[in-house]
Length: 137
Image (cartoon, rainbow, N blue to C red; front, top):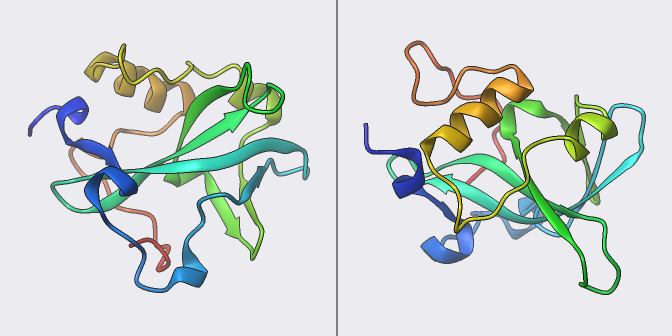
């Protein structure tokens, strides 16, 4: 397989849009299983080989766009998608403690460590099965 760094792009970069605009989860709030706010989805990283969403890019912290941080959450963490909120099975502390996302510094080791941090096997691994969520583009 080509490296994850070379194949992961945002929907915007790939000029893709969800088939049904009502199912576009970008800009929705992300909450943990207790309902605590984690931030908002500011992008979806898509594997350009299979055209499947692999990560939610979540921004949190900061004020009026200053000091915001970004982190990636694998789609495997999603437990519920509502009209305005996406729920994940991670705690606020876990997401805030995840490796921060800086596209200029990312390499394949980053993606490996991110999947390991959250406890899932990477999508390029043997036996991987994409989560059964029908609302991804």
